[in-house]
Image 1: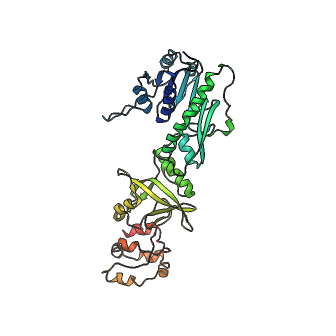
Image 2: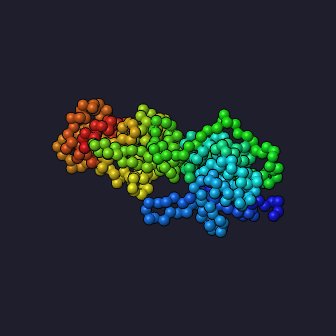
Image 3: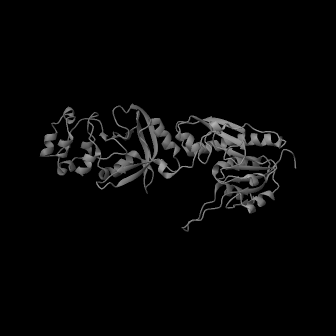
Length: 400
């Protein structure tokens, strides 16, 4: 076998690994075995899709092993029998102990989705976005038993776009990782196996990137608009950012997934973080600027624009009568006026001026009757003046 060709065992599961594995295959390296995580057992009869790495391996006719643990004696013996030069590990989901790492002549390398020692762990791409980082990259390390702690052989840097989701950034980093992986393999082909290789990581600069959980998706509006935007993008495609919307007097809520937002140049001003505003669309105040809510997905429903959501839920929510997190609703632009054909007490309200609306007190609002309030039309509610702020949603809960 030529010196430029290595015998390899690939270990991976998720899509992040596939581009680099394919590049090494295309370069002519001999792939003796592909090790992946076992296919999960589903309670339903639905067929479980193959993992991206297993699908890639089967397409190319490679032998696949899927042990419960790569550190089991049987799994170690299976890998050792390949007499591989190098283990190539990426997006695998298991930590290799010393016995497993010793199964290849040159040990193992791991492609990781961060600039180590930052974001060691299972979710480096997501954690970089959630932290508001503007630069990230990939690292290839010579593996040790310490999680993502081995010496760094190769890196590549890139800027994070203002619009990238974690899923999009991860896909892009997987392509950037090709060059870093090939670079690392080239260095190892000329390594004597004894001298130090790569650059040691500084443990004092290490940070952790723990796996995401569903509860982490809930949005904290009491931060900058930019960080809220980073949170929404960092939670895509899983577990997805969300807010809980109260809709009924009994305290029942809608769990609304927030899929896309946009930071505006409009200061939040005196609005408390979490104050929602209905104008032409839906906005929410962070602790500095307003955010446009662009795309949402109610539980069990399809993804839709915020405008579509409001049209479909206006009656249940009662426009102007609900809030998310903290703060209160403020509605619309224009003047205070009533629809044509209203009579009685409503006709009296035609004469109310915007300045008078500011003088409403909670006690006065409590004295308004449900029959009066129920006859307010959506067109009326949209006609509040820009500075007319409605009271806390608890008042409206009593009116419905």
